Length: 443
Ligand code: TRP
Ligand code: SF4
Image (cartoon, rainbow, N blue to C red; front, side):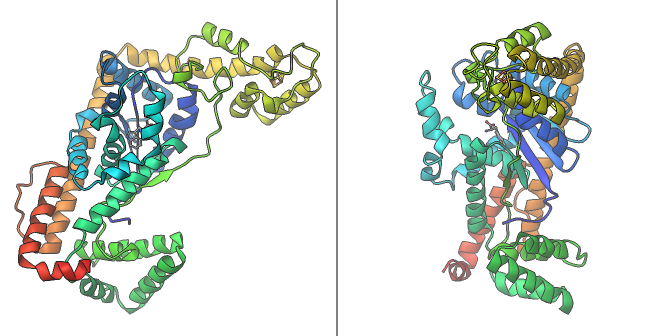
């Protein structure tokens, strides 16, 4: 389900586990840097997530948070357009996590592949903890708190976004029902005027029967552009498009990007845990040394042996860094033994040293000015927090409008609590006052 006030918001996070490397840069950051100019973006440093596996030694966490902030800024995340913040500075994440935990079946979390995989892999620590099990739920709270539509992540995180979708669906199922929904929807459709209501019905049918996403988008736009609808009716029409209730929490989508694979120095995926990385701010000498020693096609023992770029991780780097001419030169030279491996690496070394050099230079400016970084991130935290609270109030106000009820809870508290308390209370009211209705609906 997808809902209103969902201005194509993008959200993603990273755990602060030390200085970023080129794999993080090409695999995620660069994509974020593009997205920030196309969407309303929220990017945050997931320090609580870092604790789920790194709870024993927390001594580096604070430092790593600021390292990450500087990496982001130096790489080109722009605090003027994107909201950059720290998860733990927006306590609503924890609040919503707690509240979502009430409706999340254990089995959903136990079945997430990364739960068992990581437990098996990270044998040096005890991950049979409550916090680690709840990792994907905390991530769901991160996402749902801002009613995010898109979540740019790598393959390994898709299962977590899927949990967020399921939790949202369950939440909407439990709390998004209202008495006489169908009748109210009918009235709302009629109020669109005869042409538009016919169009709405057709588009809904097209989406429901054939799954056409553009029909859904058109129908949403139709609803969105109708200025005469009340907020409550708009929500109903949005909710009816995809289901039979109001989507309080819109279902997010993973945004998978076709980023080129960045190989590590040993040919495996570049990853901190493999110790095969080039840091985003590594010094040039070290980069040159590492790249010169980088694994090549093992069949090229001597300079005169022809090689096969497809069996060489250096070629994967050329795919990331080199233009078509250079790539053709590599292909020819390698297969004919016309060039040596060091020669082949030379243009890469130059490109990477330049790229890392530019980022390092910007990073130094931020490092020398920690107050500036704190100010930028502090402002981001503030903005994120306001965002979360506004969305909460939007949610709460919508509930009020739906129910025509006076607010029971003072308008001060943050999203999760407010939303939930209101929902729970109005839900209670419904159970007491309109029990029959509720049963009609769930039957
Ligand atoms: N789990 C993500 C990772 O390890 C980080 C993360 C935490 C995240 N919360 C998120 C990503 C919310 C996207 C959305 O990469
Ligand atoms: Fe790899 Fe280049 Fe050597 Fe070929 S010439 S094996 S592509 S490093």
